[in-house]
Length: 562
Image 1 (cartoon, rainbow, N blue to C red):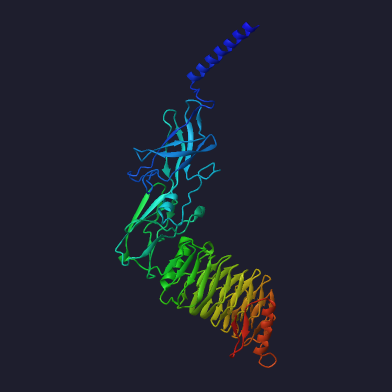
Image 2 (cartoon, rainbow, N blue to C red):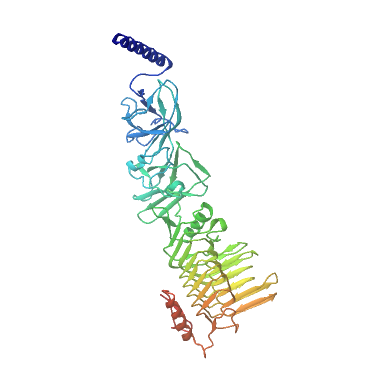
């Protein structure tokens, strides 16, 4: 029995040996239980190479700073350590304490990338740092990938390529010693920064790594600001596409630079305007570069005289959704003419958009568009907010017109006033031509005359405060002191405060003509109801509503304070 067992064991050993030889001959490798560890050679980062699609040298020209890469095979990702070559800085060896294995001689498909975050199964979208002023942050913004590469046994080489583009700025004719340089107007796709502080390579040369993107002609993509406060911007001359792996160098002369009239915050979200030209440039950013949500702050009075003004947020697709803070500064000389569908300082304010603390003095706003909306602050506001602002001058439109806003749908108007004359064809109002869809108008007053001229195509409405108040909208503590009139053919409704009301009025008053109101406001006749009576009632209503605004009567008519 024992001898038989030995024979059987020997036979089994022989069979296993033959099997092993067969597997080796078929390409299987016996080393280790899992096969042979795969050691890769990494290439592609050639510091001397001319920039071509798919390859570009990092700032240091070698693999320094790349400690490890992710290597994916058959859906499994493992970290590989990087050992740069001592003789050739264009290559490195990739090894791992927990490697992938060769189990046969077949070609394999490999994807590798850096930087790597544990848990990733695919290369992430390109996302660079906003502050690349340090060498570490500059290099750390690089992103290299060897994507879906076929690797052969005996030659396991991965060629890495860069997924970022490099933008280099070379400045000449510097007028001052100290300055900072920024790349601006950048795409924020995948949460990339709109503004990048580049790395100073020495002298007047700066570089930054950016996500591949298209840059439209006219985009202010380089901004230089000196300690004196002067700021210069450079616009892209032609439509350009910054591609992965390529370097783009721009040489610009500071002697030929023009002050854009604004500065940009480090996060690229706030634009501080210092001049009329700056405000015009900001309008272009919103209307042409789709920067709809930027915040805008005025630091000085602005004179727009002689400027052919294009409203900020020109149409439905370009509704302004940021915050415009006038800082209680005055804008004079605003003139809008022509066939703008939405006419005003702003064309359309969208949901979340806010305009506050601005004085518009002597506006001349007209729109001959038969479907147009005209307003001093904005032609149209959809769920936007207009706060603590005033308008004087004249506003006229072939459809809906209001001294502050043409149409307010939802949202709120608070603490606003106007002395402007208003003329419309369909709806006209001393503050708003139309308030609708749950809009609120609180602590507002108008002293200018309002006229509606009906062309007979539809009913016409005019009111000292609002022409048409509908859709459960509310007017609280508002008054009008101008004359309201209507003429033309067809049905015309005029009211001292409201032309037609389908919402709610609380503590609203008017004086002047006509003698009636179509919304339930109270006439100040100077005998039965005085302005002091009105002030007391309006302030009580404001206090009950929790408003910070109050009226005071120090002159002939009430004014607002908070």
